[in-house]
Structures are given as C-alpha cells and as structure tokens.
Length: 260
Image (tube, rainbow, N blue to C red; front, side, top):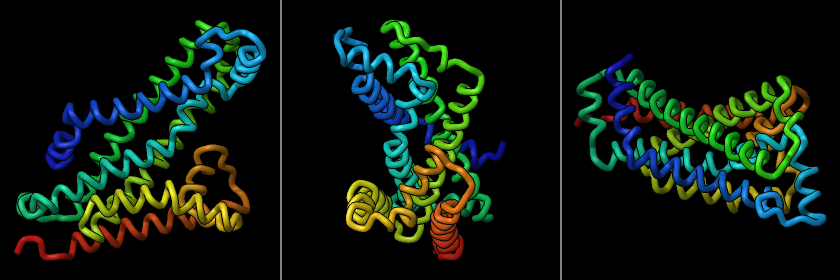
C-alpha cells in the first residue's frame, strides 16, 4: 500500500470526521425510517397501521430508507471531498506534499482513492445500519419479510448499494474538480448545494423536458432503476461532464506552480 494513500487515509479517518459523518447519516436513516414506519412503531392500529404493513411487505421495503437518502449522501460527500482538497490550499500544504512526492498525478490519484475508499465504507456502514434497523422494526411490528429475504431481492438490494456507492463517487469527483478549479472548498460546497436544493428543482419544475439533461436526475435514475436504452445518453453526458470537470481541475493542479 502506498505511503501517500496511508497518509491521506489518516487525515480522513479522524474520529471527529467519522463521528460527524456517521452521526449525520445515521440520523437521516433513523428519521426516514421513523417517517415511513411510524404507524408500525407506535402500533397505532386502524387503517394507517394496516396500510403501512401492506406497503412495507413489498420486496423494496427492506432498502427504501437507504436508497431514498442518496441525495444526502451526495451532499455530505461533496462537503468532505471539497473540504479535504481545499484544506491543502488554505494551509499551503500542497508544496510539502509535492516535494515529498514530485509525481503529482500519483499524489492526486492516491488522495482521490483514499477519499473514495472512505466514502464507500461509510455508505456500506449506513447500508448495513439501515437494513438492521428495518429488520428490527419488521420483527417488532409483525411485517411479513418473506419477499424481503429472497435471494433475488437480496441481490437487487446489493446492486442498489453498489449503485449508490458509484453515484456518490461521481459527486465526490465533481467536488474535487470544482475545488481544484476555483481553489475554494466553501464555494464548491455552496454551489453544489444550491444547485441540488434550488437550481435543479426550479429548472425541472418550469422546464420538465430539461430533466433529461440535469445532473441529479440522471444520477438518481442510475441509482433507482437504470436500464440501458434511449435515456442512457443523458447519463453518459452527465458522467462526461463530471469527468471533464474532474480532469480540468486536476490538470490545473498538476500544472500550476505551487512550489514557488
């Protein structure tokens, strides 16, 4: 294992960062599960209780909480990745890193790999946590889990976890590229959050046909129910855009004079 990868991993896997990341994501998981399973948790009885039982006995009931929280994973990942890269600018530590390892491409690759490994494992922890909590509630509320635990459905859920991990990595690459281009993690975080929370929803509301071109809509379609077909080119276009921003940002970082 490269010394650069290990050094970068030590920066990321600090208890404060891990607790912050897991605390926020686990809280989102619990809030979503509470909203979805409230009648069952409270044993409220009546129509709402029976309807909740019927709805959540479907095969997708086991992974609903995890998959529907992907936008929050995107935003938190953007914050972590952008902050990590911008920290090197604000503390002027790129110089020290590049003196230690002059091969800048190798440095950036190992740094990106450490960040993607971190986000992938955190998502895996959330995946396991959401499944365990959901199964516990099912046992408590008397939900029939026969459709949940079939080999076909478990493979489908695992496929969904992999898709969420890949989608989150796309947003991480976007954050790295933008931060390297503008040299500011704060502006990257603000810009991406504003786009996801305000810009894209407004555009798709007033111009529904524009949805096929937007970043989040295409990434969400990849996570939720992606099928190769006529709409595939929209996803490829978005991935190409993210890849271009990532490449341009890192090209700037590789070529600029940081050692002076």
